[in-house]
Image 1 (cartoon, helix red, strand yellow):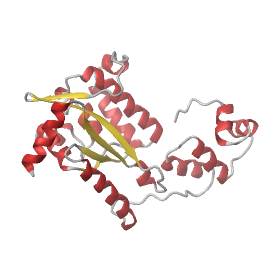
Image 2: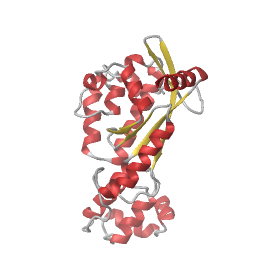
Image 3: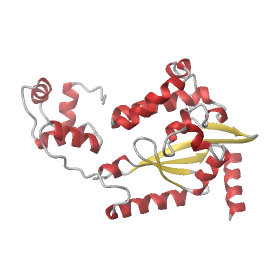
Length: 253
């Protein structure tokens, strides 16, 4: 995890003296349980990694990690379902920390079907995964008109999330997909216009769609699973795309 904070920055952010931060970093002082939680809160560390920090410091984890099917997660999953449904007629999908699809609304499923009924089989994996959908050559890439603009930005985002969230699954998917990428596209800065959001433009059989994404997370999560859930909502970037989605919803209705 990289925060690019100096000892002084961390001290000011966490309310701990710089001297004590220095002692902790050098190993001259051993952090208490409260200190681990205080520093991890200041650094906005994901709950899974806070548990890891506690374990490394010799303390028991404090944040539970419930399965999505756990009855105590019913309220959370109900909220996710409501958000996805309310976003129709535009696509929306709920993902875990490794970009695995947890839940999706009907417009997202219809958008996937446009790419081919076998789209998830083509990109591989034992479950639908948005990282594979975007970065596998047989996924969405051939349909993205502005791939040279959007691809490097998406890849860097995936790398940042892998570094921040940790976890072997996320890193393993990135390692699997890296040999399939164009090195020049990945590591060269994208030459894009300075606009508020960069839309990705799809051309599927002559049907042109222009969309941008907004990501939502649970701001007060106290469970690892809930903390790692995020909802990706797609919005039309032009009037024509909005009309297409609304027209499709009306026809289906």
